[in-house]
Length: 314
Image (cartoon, rainbow, N blue to C red):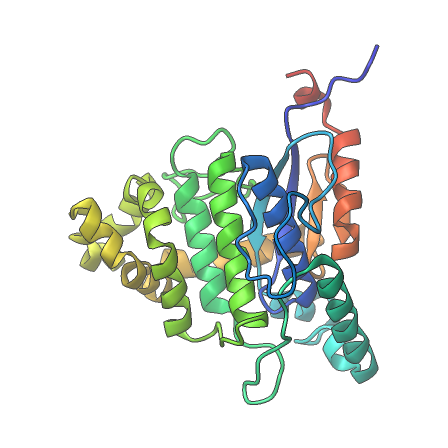
């Protein structure tokens, strides 16, 4: 009897906004989801014309479902190595090789890339704020009765340890957001640690995010807490007013709300418990681990071939 395949193959995508190779994986995942939803690639592509075949689209016999899991690598590196930075930045020769390797990949797959922006010298920045915002968006977009929504509004933090698999349209929206944060950093040369840079991105996405956030039970729960009541009028405004105030309001929540601030710590600690020691890192539904952008396609193939029995029979 032929093996029964699921409608989708699920993959956890652990990433860090400072990670060069996470950027490459984020673009490949975005383009794959764009292909699934029938959308064209919206990245600025200064050298080539968009064709029906997007470079970097993953090969799969089943649709891809991605759980986006942003983390901070600093605490992860300290846990596993005792150092705050990874091996790439501790070895000049390895750093030079990695940067050249990324340039080659970006040229081959037509990914916009200018390298680390000067801050004042090229290198990593504090990615806490964009990581908080991404985590906030992920959980709020999921708080609508998604089948795998990893949410428990009775939990003090409003979430559990399970990965969040959104519906396809929301996956594509979140993938576009993640790709755009990376692109602002590695292509546009913006310092994504700065609040005004993150705010500009939120304002750019406001009209797309507003429908999901305005009806999100988790957002209402956050605003009902004492620390969020200063935004209580925002969630009761008209759709146009809600959208207009979305950027500053989300930014304030992510900068100051203790529950939201705790989510990144929670997610990073969970990464350590699961053995995530770098980024990008992929975990299949049956628990297999894959590290690195060059293992993304392999992770997808493994996920297709090793679907848990309970899902394969669905």
